[in-house]
Length: 117
Length: 112
Image 1 (cartoon, rainbow over the protein chains, first blue to last red):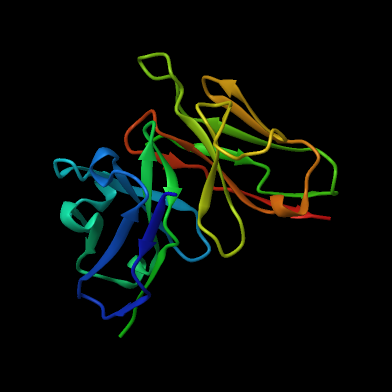
Image 2 (cartoon, chains in turn green, brown):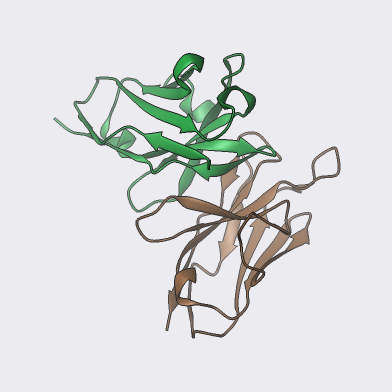
């Protein structure tokens, strides 16, 4: 079955960067887009962008341009998101989600990123 | 950006009763190909969101037929008939018609 295994909790310092991962299994990694979504504490959901692992094409929500960078490693079926110039506003849970029919269908368990000195 | 307004913000329902959630969009969600990318998700406590309904009214794999999506254009509704304990959580509508993709602010379903 489709599984998306995300990396563990991160505690990072302001102004630093963090790279979180999402390892896919149970389907052909290169054939489906991968979405990334943010959920700030007590808040709703925001779409960050997607990557197509087959060719590396990406699309970002303008709000996250320059903040998030999406990449994918076909050899390990793993998608990555790097977040840069971190502030407390970036403290959130970040989800990856496999695309089916143009929408996030299967979601990873989420990664909590806490930005604190 | 497209704004999705969900009402009510919270809902308390007796087991076995029906629940209804509204999602209104600031723009029509009908795409140029005639398809409407309006979906519904449920986020149970401590879990990731799970897809319930896609394309306004299509139930995702494994979703019980108690969940019924309807609507068109800018007005959409999710009805849950015969609410069960495992239905509690926060429901989100979501649109993938316009860029950037956006979510509604959520409706919390509680069991009385």
